[in-house]
Structure formats: C-alpha cells, structure tokens
Amino acid sequence: MRSVRAGGVIHENVRHTTRFTVVGNHLSQHAELSLVAIGLAVHIQSLPGGSPVDIKSLTKRFREGACRIAAGLRELETHGYLRRELDRDATGKIVTLTISCNHPGRSAADEEEPVRRAPARRTEAPRRALPAVPQPAYPSPDLLRTALGVLAGLRREDARLHLSATEAEHLAPGVVAWLERDLTPEAVHRVLTCALPQEPLRRPAALLAHRLADRLPPLPPFRAPEPGTCGACRT
Image (cartoon, rainbow, N blue to C red; front, top):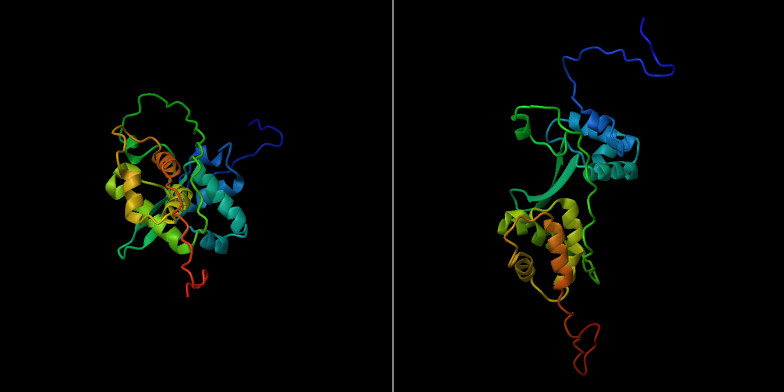
C-alpha cells in the first residue's frame, strides 16, 4: 500500500519514446525564475535549431502578451538560459543571435570528463550591473546603428572583447556620445582597443564602459553663425 501525503501530487508516468525534451530540475524547479520564464525556456529548448524565438513570434504562439514574454526572456538571460550575441551575416548586416543553454555553466566538453563524485550543487551568482556610460544629447537611429557597428567590430581587434547583445545595448549610447563630439567610428574603435591589459578580461563590457566614461572628450566648441547668415538654416 502506497503512502501519499494528503493533497500532494501523484505521478502517473509513461516512458516517452518519441517527441520529448529532457529538461533539468535546475530549470523546472528554479527558485528565482517565474512560471512564465520556466515555460518559455522549456518551449525554446523543445524547438529545432533555427526556429524564431523573438518576442513577436512568441507572442503569436502564446497568449501572455509581449510585456510578460519580454520579461520572461530577460529572466532567462539573467540566469544564463539564454544568451544574445551580435554578429554580421553574409551581407555585412548586424544580426542578433539567440543561444539557448539547457544547463548554464556547463558545456558539451564537460560531459566527456568522467564523473568521480556527485558535483556540488551550483548556485548562480547574481550579475553585477555594468558601470554607467555617457548619454548622448540626440540619440539618433543612424548614430545608434553606427555605434553598434563599432562595438560589434571590437572582437575582430581582440577576441576578448566579445559582447552580448544586452551589453552592446548598454554601451551603445556611450559610443554615440563620443560620435557627437566629432570623433569618427575608427577613432572610437582605437580608444576602446588600445593598450588593453595582458591578463584575461573578466568583464570586458565593464572595462569598455569605464573607458567610455573616463576618457570622454569635451564637446566641440560652439561655432557662432557668420555675420549676415541665419543660424538655423545657414543661409
């Protein structure tokens, strides 16, 4: 006779042989993720590679709405289950890659090592916020695209400067603030990549944020309109 706690769940399980996804209890019983985030993670892990998982596509699939889905995706990114990276496609256009991690902190190479003892329970350390960056006076879309292009190109100079999409979004306004000061994208690139430390960079985005704030040049001097011209239309 089985003993069942009053009100507790009773499992009636059958063995899956097709169309199933293995999900770790570290996700399904995560103490800090919301139910929406856990459901999104399970859904994304069940999809074949190349499936769209942007907010618009997920909103069409689920009824929770764009705001709740966006919040759930941010939770998964904070805890390492999702990672967004900037890259360029074959045409040179900047695109965002979304990478789903079914076990944050581990890789396929870890599975090749023999298990000698049960691993200690892992706890994810909270991510520290990045330092603030200068804010532009007029963050135009063109300047923001140029700034993202500058940040995406940093890793070609030094592979340690690989940024996630979230980090690039945080840093981009700081780059725009430099571009507003009549610096070229090439000049900003040089400032961010010159004389980097030789040791491994633990938080490259934090280093870049510090440089953007600490080395910010002054605004260009105001140029008064020439006599007999209109300052607004320069005529």
